[in-house]
Image (cartoon, rainbow, N blue to C red):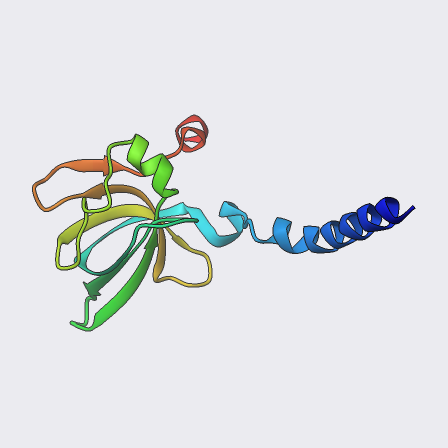
Length: 134
């Protein structure tokens, strides 16, 4: 009887946490605008090569000469490593060009599709699903 009570308690806690776990995964279409691809060009100020998504903060000079900080996001580190990226592929101080989809509500976030490195090499942050849909 005690085993049943413990199992029931664990199952109840697990079910109670399920909505939080599921809501942690966001919808790409809800956050990014596939109809608004664009390119930005700037200097890397911060690198986050960790889960759930690799992020690069990029300082971009806008048309008025102001510095604007962009939050750019790629795939998971594991997926990027399989595509040839490494933790030190992009470093603070690198001048890079990024192509991707900007946010619906926040126009200074971007989901990275391609990155052009300082040496001209182009790396992709596309998933197979992106290539199938586009």
